[in-house]
Image (cartoon, rainbow, N blue to C red; front, side, top):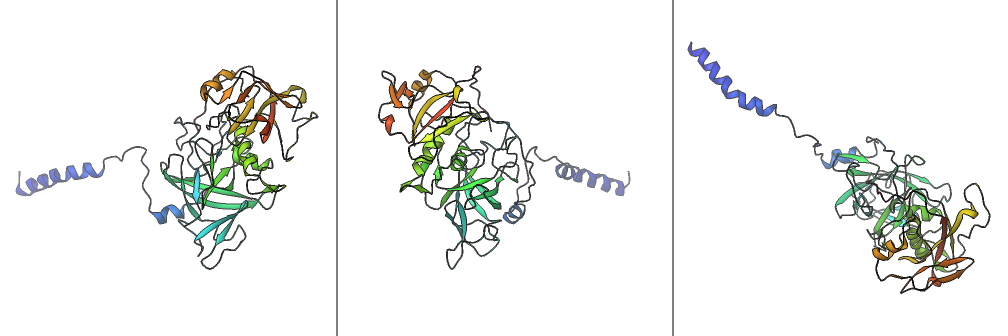
Amino acid sequence: MTATKKYLLAWMCLQLPLLAHAESPKPANVAPQLSDAERYARRCQSQAPHRAIKPQGTMLWGTRRHWDTEKGADERSSVLVSANLNPLKQSNSQVKALKLEGGRLVAASTTALAPVPPTERGIIGSVLQGAASDGSPVEVAICGAEPSAEDPGVIWYRIEAWNAVAQEWENPCVALDRVPDPRAFAVSGVWDASGNHHDTPDKITFACENGAITKCIRWGYKPWASRDGHSMADLHQACTRMARADYCGNGRSHTHEDTALDIYDQRGVLSRTTESSADWDVARASFEAAWAPDGATCLARTRDGRALATILQECPNRFRTDTSLELGKGDRCTMRRTDVDPATSLLRNQSYGPPKDVSSQSDSL
């Protein structure tokens, strides 16, 4: 072998480990990390597909429980529970913060706080620092705004949150067949995992279209409004408990999606339905429970058909069963709170009798 051939052979042997290292495959399922500029440039581009899913049980925030839809998650978890109004992570203008006025976000400029059209650049495209239910940070972008057809003073926002797992912006709201591309209301304060509302300054909740917070607003209980000199915040909070059948006030629901309800309250926002229609059969309905902001004050039965004994076990010492109570107009409690007079409840509800086939399964959104 000539000296030249020996040199070439030695050089190739030295290069083989380098080539093998350069061609080694990247770990599976690991998305490349993006810079801040790259991440913000990709917001509001609708890159991720909308997922149509059918959850069991009523949601509080209306958001997905986990970015990985194959992973089980507790119903009291969420990928997005709050967002900071100040300071903004990113903005298309000189606006440094946002302010919530009723059901509408307005831009706070460097010189003054003044309402601006929701399509103004200071709002659309803005990125807020948010948080998931476990406290982990998550960024949320405002991608669109449109007045509610029911009340033009309330604005629907189209939002996207940064999915750090997939390295994509995605709509954090749960989509249903009837609402495949859900929007969100901006609501003051934060709801924790137990369903309690905290009036936290400079923090808002993006309450998605299919969640209880938004449903109760659309039913007439706007927490920022008042009626006859009384704030509607307590009625709204009681409604969120009622909508999810959260009897114990611990964030646990006892219902199924699309359950028909009849709601009536002490302040005359909603009245008892007395005539049947295509949407409600008076003959099938019966009193279920009376409600306060921290849960049920008394029950006649459970919405999903489980025994009342299971509620006693879930929240011991909260209810008593040794006496019944007549609330009037045929509403009769068989189980009542030990610390609250059910007669002072803010609202009550009727529902249809429990389904014949009761399932205790929970979804993993």
